[in-house]
Length: 203
Image (cartoon, rainbow, N blue to C red; front, side, top):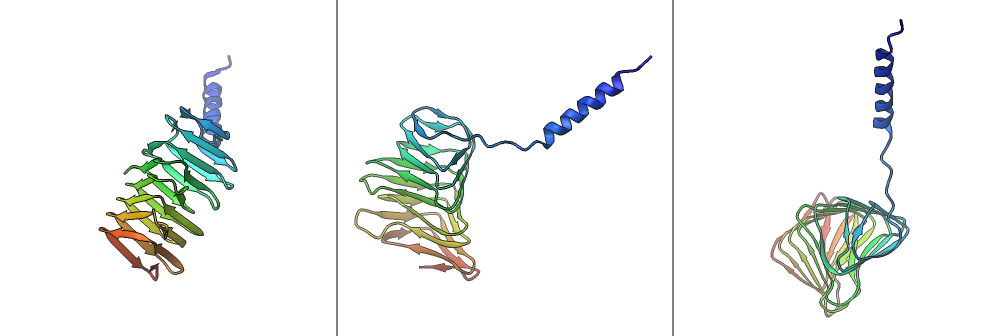
């Protein structure tokens, strides 16, 4: 008599191993305008408009291939891990728009988060921003850093050197590493910690 149990167990183990070895596939967010839940974790070479009431369902978000997020509401990114590729951007569009990165949110890569210059736009960082290379910028009519901003490669511009823009730092800003420069531009009020280390430059 054939005993099937060992073969069944071996087959199930093999299937489990195949499932474990299979890498998770990126869930691409289609371009368009959103006013509710946004499903997916990757925006690739597309523009997504985030209007009032919209939110990302995933805790991770990857921007690649010159992807853009038009942020057209007052809202926050909470507990998210965000990566930006070269040429990608998060763009506040319209008067009195506001974006907050809460204390559990991290943003890493070629960081580019800025506004269109409309009155009342505000960017607040309570989390961790790490600029890793290339040219990046963070600015709005009101930019507040209450968390951590670090550049460990490339050039990062904080604030914009024109009337109508201001920045306040109550957290930490660090330029870390040779060939790394952080520019503090325009009306920049520092009440926190500014550090240049390992041959990094703060200007």
